[in-house]
Amino acid sequence: MSISGSGLLAAVGVLLLGVEACTQPNADVILERVDRNMHSENRIVESRMTIHGRRGSRTMTSRTYSVGDRQSFTEYLSPAREAGTKMLKLEDQLWIYSPPTDRIIQISGHMLRQSVMGSDLSYEDMMEDRRLTDVYTAELRGEDFVDDRETYVLHLKARVTDIAYGSRTIWIDTERYVPLREELYAKSGQLLKRTSFSDVMQIEGRWFPTTILFKDMLKQGDGTEFRMTGIQFDQEIPDHIFTKAALRR
Amino acid sequence: MLLALRLAVRNLIGAGLRTWLNALVLSFSFVVIIWLKGIMVGWDHQAKNDMTDYEIGGGQYWHHLYDPYDPLSLSDSHAPVPSHVKDEIQAGDMEPVLVVPGHIFPRGRMQSVVIKGINPAQTIWKLPTGELDADTDAIPAMIGAVMANGTRLGQGDRVMIRWRDTNGTFDAAQILITAVFSSNVPSAEAGQVYVPLERLRKMAVMHDQATILTFRDGRSQRPEIEGWILKTKAELTRQVDDMIKAKTVGQSIFYGVLLLLAMLAIFDTQVLSIFRRQKEIGTYIALGYTRKEVVGLFTVEGAMHAVLAAFVATLYGLPFLAWQAKAGWTIPMEASEFGMAMAQTLYPVYTVGLVVSTALLVTLATAVVSYVPSRRIARMNPTDALRGKLQ
Image (cartoon, rainbow over all chains, first blue to last red; front, top):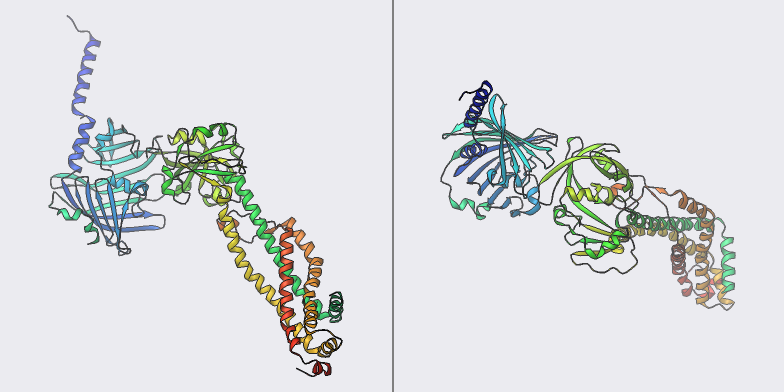
């Protein structure tokens, strides 16, 4: 049995495609590796959020304690006007304590769609804690460069109806498995928001982007910059932090 | 009584310039009060007519969760159109409107809007909804002049609009402004974008749903519909009534000041009259007049100022009021800033009741003011009065 020239070429092609398929991981595998970097049992983050508006920028600092994706407690430290404001998220519920009024308000229903402190982020964006693989079907669309880093381009399409964004595209660093860019789209395919991740650092053995820029693409302005000034993973966080009583403390 | 009237007229005419000055001042009150009240009545008519023509029709049914003052509740305030009103909708006597919250981004500035889905073929309102039936790649949309001024959008402009469907998923697309209308009803214009009903139902995945059902005929008794709240025209225009009531109270102070000035003049005239005509008063009593009759004579004489004022007011007020009814009064500031149905130019409407009530009010006030100083006559000693002795 002899092998013709074209048959040989086809065989080599199939073999090469197979090798390519083997070197390029599956989309779900990529997301899982991203999860390993981005998610932790718990963490304590000190951050600085700068909201760039039309009339200038304002910066606020905060400290956040979180356990997994389901519990988090944030206390704003500055400026003086916001200092003492606290937010508690337990599962799918969110409470805010405001010192001037000394009241705890539950943010629910359509109030979740409001902006957090005038930023480009909504409470709902903050509350989203479902894993991407649970609500989206991921597809690897190829490779691209973001800030001179080689990335995988993953396109995620919603497979559930009760979700804010119909699809998203994520650029994931091929070496460090952290997202470098994310774009959120409307059902029509219109780009709504872009998130840029930078200052990727190795912290306690994992790669982690410490600066995130959120930008509402339909709005003017330079977006909201979220810079993590200190981050500690897998710390002992007392349970009483995640109680409503802690809001008034 | 006839004699009293004759005497009163003779005395008034005899007083010359003083009488005419009093009558002139009083006539201002007549004309200004009638004009201002006419403006209020005209505003009431115009506001209710415009609201009927551009917003409320003959009345509405609201979805039980719909609250126009709570934008956070808008996403939940929709339900399928009740089956038993479908015939009325088919006949064009009822129009369903779907309300969905959203945002537009004119020149990159985010602005909250209410997206209203409306039937382009409707005939209940005077809105130019036919312009929504346009062949375009964008979503055809219509906005009010208030919204157009605020966003600097005009006919033919395109702008991005973002909304969420019934599941909360974001969607966004370009809208093309196919018409800009002016209605004098800020609540039908401010922050509202009108798009074709069926298009919005598709956009929001709310098939056959509505938030408001507006009917044409407001006179007939409407049945209750479960899950919907009946809002009659009277209820929907109550804010106009309340506003006019509040404004009328404010204006009453102005009327009061005007009347007070006129009444002061008449009071002074009466006091002077009684002081200077003591011999005349004594003569009346000597001729057999009772004190009461003399008081009545002076009161009638004072009250006659109101009659003369009405005559003077007719001379110059009638042409002025007639011209105002035709030309109207243009408010010297942007009427839409009031936040209420109000035209830039208000046309006063004068009713018979308005004129009669104003005339009665002024005459009664004049009679009272004339009577008060005349009471002194009752305390006069007729002999001293005859002698002209000061009392």
